[in-house]
Length: 490
Ligand code: FRU
Image 1 (cartoon, rainbow, N blue to C red):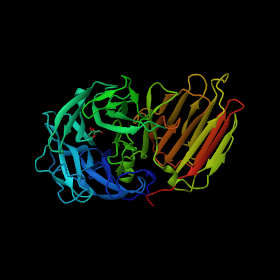
Image 2 (cartoon, rainbow, N blue to C red):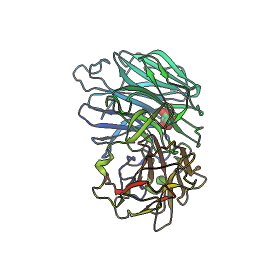
Image 3 (tube, protein in one colour):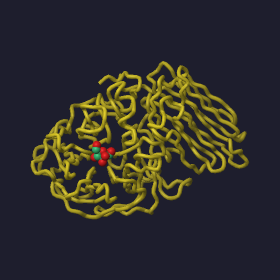
Image 4 (cartoon, rainbow, N blue to C red):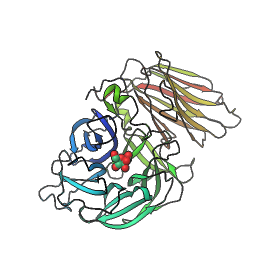
């Protein structure tokens, strides 16, 4: 793959060529290497002809492309989404002579039925053999897919979607080859038209030693902003049944390009996820295919927690970039320790990798008596083409955070919604981070309680950052830095 193209993210994963959608089979192997598989069409820059592409990394940013891991046997049944596990105790019987066996569990999507198949690997997940006894699970359904498997105390658990019946089914197994139905989690949250890519994962409660369970689910089409998006349910799991803490629908990301998020297997209660940073509404239409021969980017790897925030009702998913500090240049391009109530910070971010970040920390905010125009906002623009993305927070009253990609040329009705926003409940502090990487922007706010992912395709690289405060209280203190990020594909 050529990773020098104008639209090519420099620290996010994108496929060498062809079309990519969901992350699949993500796991940490016995030697400390992370494996990312993904829905892959190696022969065109539009969806179809599904294989599992493969890449590996030891830091989740520096990826090495690997040969295709799973290919269809013929052109009538494709390899759809799924997961992978390690089987150190040889529960499957595939691995009598090793403790690092890997099993991939995926949907074989045929014209009449979608069934769950498995394949095993003796070499840490680089090559796979399809199990001769496939399928391991079938239900006579044409819309039955995306198995996510994990080990729970003394058995395997699979969560898999009956997509058009809005059912997430939980199955259990002693050996990965025979599965019994245990329970259903049905009709929860926003339904959209289909339930896809469920995940069930244990994660830490922020700042405590406790853990909780999260059911994560993707809906498509029919997301509030159009097309596809992820949602989640905090709750408990006893090995067979998942119980949500409440009936609330919680959208995982307030941008439009965060779908089919999957959590790595084998990282304990450190819950690390990667999502497909696109939307089924326009993933086939964006210009990277025609211009550079590749289509779609993954989100940043994210560390996740559940948090019972003072600013929120109930539990909220906290997502932050996974150890991004390792890519940050040591010197900031521009910084201020106090921007003030009405200030401007300017940064020229041209000449680097094309990737950079803005970090903002506000203390001493006093919300009483502020005008409705009180805000802290940013404009990220191109000095050559005058294109821009804007975003920020209206602080007073019903506080909102917004992100707007409408100032990017060519970003029109084909791609639909340009402006995204989320309601915030603020106190006297706030923080946000913005990560920009050539054709993708990710925003994290309130220590990760809110995140937004959006792709954009500007004619010229964005090379200028302006941060402004306006009409804030006089005692406010705003610390901000703009830093270049090092590319990992060079
Ligand atoms: C979600 C999805 C999955 C399916 C895969 C096919 O984006 O539709 O449900 O397994 O993509 O590529």
